[in-house]
Amino acid sequence: MLSFLLPLASKIIADAVDKIPNDAELGEKLIDICLKIIGKAVKLTKTDADDKLFEQVSKAIKAR
Image (cartoon, rainbow, N blue to C red; front, side, top):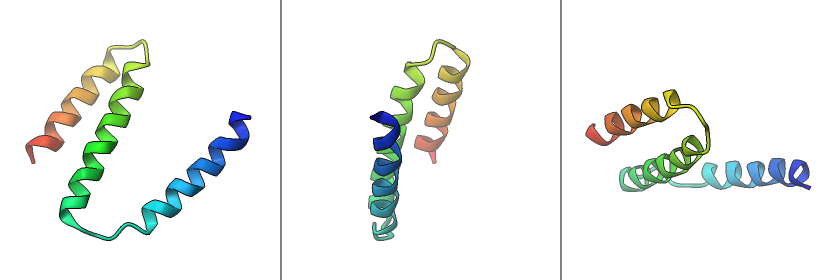
Protein backbone atom coordinates (compact mmCIF):
# COMPACT_ATOMS: atom_id res chain seq x y z
CA MET A 1 0.00 0.00 0.00
CA LEU A 2 2.79 2.43 0.93
CA SER A 3 4.70 1.63 -2.26
CA PHE A 4 1.60 2.67 -4.22
CA LEU A 5 0.75 5.80 -2.25
CA LEU A 6 4.25 7.24 -1.82
CA PRO A 7 4.89 7.97 -5.53
CA LEU A 8 1.38 9.43 -5.82
CA ALA A 9 1.93 11.69 -2.81
CA SER A 10 5.32 12.72 -4.18
CA LYS A 11 3.74 13.72 -7.51
CA ILE A 12 0.99 15.73 -5.78
CA ILE A 13 3.53 17.56 -3.62
CA ALA A 14 5.81 18.28 -6.59
CA ASP A 15 2.89 19.70 -8.59
CA ALA A 16 1.76 21.83 -5.65
CA VAL A 17 5.26 23.21 -5.09
CA ASP A 18 5.51 24.15 -8.78
CA LYS A 19 2.37 26.30 -8.41
CA ILE A 20 3.65 28.27 -5.40
CA PRO A 21 4.43 31.88 -6.32
CA ASN A 22 7.94 33.26 -5.87
CA ASP A 23 7.81 35.41 -2.76
CA ALA A 24 10.59 36.08 -0.24
CA GLU A 25 8.41 35.70 2.85
CA LEU A 26 6.88 32.50 1.51
CA GLY A 27 10.37 31.23 0.72
CA GLU A 28 11.40 31.71 4.34
CA LYS A 29 8.32 29.79 5.52
CA LEU A 30 9.11 26.96 3.10
CA ILE A 31 12.68 26.80 4.43
CA ASP A 32 11.34 26.58 8.00
CA ILE A 33 8.95 23.77 7.02
CA CYS A 34 11.73 21.87 5.24
CA LEU A 35 14.03 22.22 8.25
CA LYS A 36 11.33 20.81 10.53
CA ILE A 37 10.70 17.85 8.23
CA ILE A 38 14.40 17.11 7.77
CA GLY A 39 14.96 17.53 11.51
CA LYS A 40 12.35 14.88 12.27
CA ALA A 41 13.85 12.54 9.68
CA VAL A 42 17.34 13.00 11.12
CA LYS A 43 16.10 12.20 14.63
CA LEU A 44 14.79 8.85 13.36
CA THR A 45 18.28 7.67 12.42
CA LYS A 46 20.57 6.03 14.93
CA THR A 47 23.75 7.91 14.03
CA ASP A 48 25.10 11.09 15.56
CA ALA A 49 26.93 12.31 12.45
CA ASP A 50 23.76 13.30 10.66
CA ASP A 51 22.43 15.00 13.81
CA LYS A 52 25.56 17.14 14.00
CA LEU A 53 25.49 17.88 10.27
CA PHE A 54 21.82 18.90 10.40
CA GLU A 55 22.50 21.14 13.40
CA GLN A 56 25.29 22.95 11.52
CA VAL A 57 23.24 23.33 8.34
CA SER A 58 20.25 24.58 10.30
CA LYS A 59 22.36 27.18 12.12
CA ALA A 60 23.93 28.34 8.85
CA ILE A 61 20.57 28.75 7.14
CA LYS A 62 19.09 30.65 10.08
CA ALA A 63 22.15 32.93 10.32
CA ARG A 64 21.96 34.14 6.72
